[in-house]
Structure formats: structure tokens, C-alpha cells
Image (tube, one colour):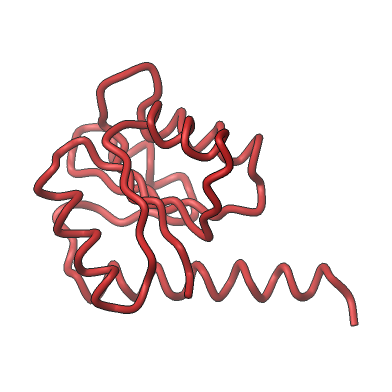
Amino acid sequence: MSRILVVENEAGVRALVAEVLRDDGFDVVEAASGDEALNSLLLGESVDLVLTDIDMPGTLDGLALAECVRTRFPHIPIILNSGGPRRAQARLVENFIPKPFRIDELLLLVRTTIVRQRDSGQADAGP
């Protein structure tokens, strides 16, 4: 079972996304900020994907969190989402879904991102 770290400061949105992912068979860890998410990872939380909003309070917004994850945990893929004015910046990254998003679109992106990461890891591992 794949484990996803959902990072969203709006509790209702975070709970809904987490519930949808759990209903689809994923194990979900939740964080209310980029700072909380990075702290969890630094303390050893093992995840297969980070799904983060861009616009969040604290010292790390979603873009800064994504940069930290890429640097410290390059094996963990990241999906960014946003409905705010910074969504144009996020379109520059490979995995982005604009808010509001349809649940089926989110699930498809999550699944394909995890499969793509696993396939690339297997290719790197050799025969």
C-alpha cells in the first residue's frame, strides 16, 4: 500500500482529500503546513508521495517544501496544487493539479505519479 503525505492548511480540504485517498486504498499522513510536513519527513516518516498545496502559512509554502523534498528526499515524488494566484508558477513543475480539481483527476495523477516513480526506481536498480 502506498503512503501519501497530504499537506494542506485548510482542514476541511485536507480531510476530504485524505478521505478520498484512503477510500482508494492509500495510507495517508496529514500535515497542516509545509513546516509540519518537512518535520515529519526529517523525523523519519516514510512516504511514497507528497501532495501539497502551494499557498500555506509558515516558513515553508508548498514550493519551498517541494524544493526541500527534492533536495533531501529525491526519491519522493511531489504533486503541487493551488487555486491561488501562484498557480502559474506551479505549472512549471511536472506534477501539478489546479484547484478546484475533480477527484477522478486527482486519483489518476496520484496513481500515475507513483507508478512512474516505481518504474524509474526499478530501472535504476538494474536486473
